[in-house]
Length: 144
Ligand code: TYD
Image 1 (cartoon, protein in one colour):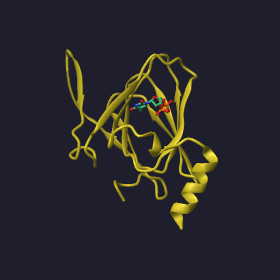
Image 2 (cartoon, protein in one colour):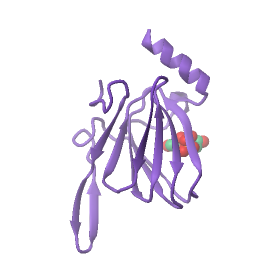
Image 3 (cartoon, helix red, strand yellow):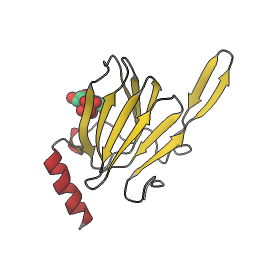
Image 4 (cartoon, protein in one colour):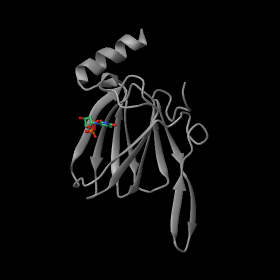
């Protein structure tokens, strides 16, 4: 197990990202291997998305990720092939840790919400499973 499971059969966790607030705003921070269980090798973020847009529809074979939404509101729909859970990212200090093997869809609930991701590895298209039937087959094989 790479980090505490939030639900018995789901490989994700929710963390409260450390934040320092003052009259001049709020500063949030995450340190690899301290606040999250992996070293951060890549950061990417998604901007300029209209409400109602869905992205994602894929799973990863090995990648660990921390998702957070510093601005706006985004729903993350997770599916491990058996159970489905929806996680709302609606505040800057809420982080969603994802283990590999989770099919995810992201639904933008407000215009221009920003999705940030800290990832455990470099971009590798071979780590993606982009076909849902292939995902179900992969999960079944992993369970054997
Ligand atoms: P993808 O991970 O499929 O994003 P989403 O699920 O939000 O649609 O990536 C979209 C495109 O961006 C895809 O062609 C791969 C490319 N990409 C990179 O080149 N490097 C990266 O680090 C990421 C995350 C994506």
